[in-house]
Length: 64
Image 1 (spheres, rainbow, N blue to C red):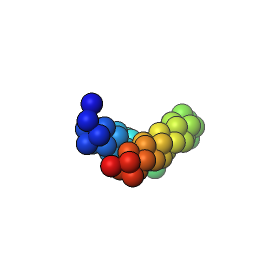
Image 2 (image 1 turned 90 degrees about the horizontal axis):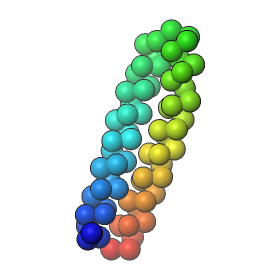
Image 3 (image 1 turned 90 degrees about the vertical axis):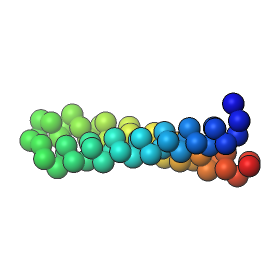
């Protein structure tokens, strides 16, 4: 796989994680307490994934 393709894939993964994070945050703000308790841990997980994908994309870009 080419360097450009890896950068594109990592960038898309970060964008996908960002969209998921936004959706989960919207769900959190429009939910009752029970749903909020279920959503909060998922927000934390997705935020971590987003950070790691952004770091990966950045690392790949710096190698370019």
